[in-house]
Each structure stands twice: as C-alpha cells, then as structure tokens.
Image (cartoon, rainbow, N blue to C red; front, side, top):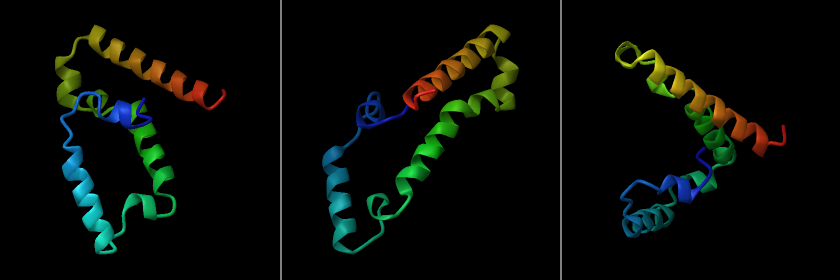
Length: 92
C-alpha cells in the first residue's frame, strides 16, 4: 500500500534537495501545486487505490502470456492482501 513518504521513497534514489528547490520555485511563480488544489489529496488516494488493486501487469497481455499460472495466482493473492489492508485501514 502506498500511504506516505516512507513507502514512496523506499526503493528510489530521490534527489530531495532538487525537489525542494523545484517546489520553492513553483511557489515563487504562483504555480498550482497539489497541496494548493482542493481535492488533490482525495484524487491521489483514489489513483493509488486503483493502481494497487488493478496493477497493470495483471492486464498486460504480454505479461500474462509469459507468466506462469503460479506467478499470476501469486500476483492475485498479493492484490487480495492489499485490498485487505485497505479495508482494515478503513475499519471494515
């Protein structure tokens, strides 16, 4: 599940200093940024929910063709576990 900076940055080489400079310049020119757009957080949560529950590789014909039935089943189980985490987090 993607729920914050720790998960976001867990396996990426993110240049945080550059990101801060970029953000500061966007602020300076008055550009719209996700923190300043009403509903952007909700949109982001829906986006990642869909990405987590319908990962592209499960719908990519080339991947489905080369993966074994066992690999596909494992991927489906991972999606099922992810859905369970979302539901638990929402109190269901």
